Image 1 (spheres, rainbow, N blue to C red):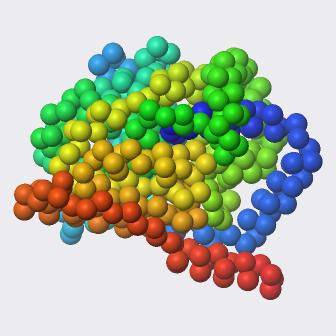
Image 2: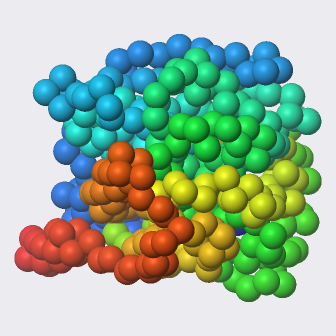
Image 3: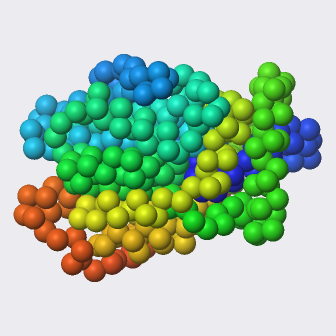
Length: 390
């Protein structure tokens, strides 16, 4: 995930400790049953099943195999001048986190490239010393070289994926300067601040930040025990995942889908990335996005990367638009998928138009907007009324 990535350190610590909490387990079980009974209507149509048009492996510059998937655009909507959209996921997640956006963009006629960052998802485990934000930027460059070697690009990154985009810009500025027409930074940070408080305050946040890597590394040596504990404490795990990932009701399927991604990431991998995330500071790299249509998105109630963590991106990229989503936590793409997909499609169209007309981004006023997912609020209210009447 992100600057507060250590937030998921807190999440990992919470998950490990929660397995033995019987009283919490009873409450969690109740919450789970309520969600199953009332909120299944919030599950997306077709759930999260998706088959990529292409799957292949890209070798990183140090030889680590990276899993890449490509969705080709629907034929009726395809156009030769449309950019390729490249998604980068966050810490402890995988390319599966973008499943609903990839469907929406392919349906709108865009070619979509997604990849699992090293040691995440279906990509291979990498040496611990290579688990850095700088290496992720180089990895993204290799993915682009192999999966989208020419034509305009749109870069979209969530949390650590946004950091990866900044790292790419720092190391390979010509890629951004010559090819990128639009960029979206979702629930991320440019760094350079004390980013960890886990929603509990700076003092506890700093403590967990120092403790996290060592704790997770030790716990990772007992990964099998942790996996066994998960099977007996899924209700507790769901409660914690929901708390740190979402700020509005979601279906049980969404919580499990998210939890399986997070806890499918080995604890040792969580520990290996934290030192680099802790010192992340790519503010200077944002200069490379000058002239690029840029959207910054945050959940208003995000405990891991609240809106002020993205202020530097908005401040340092002229013309950047800041969108804050009400009733939203860190995993916005699964919590409010329609809102995010609509905003990304609008961003891409603005970027295409600006590139075609030679519009100067630095002349655009900075805009901060707050949006509310009214459609979801209505579905939630209807589901709850139905539960009371049932």
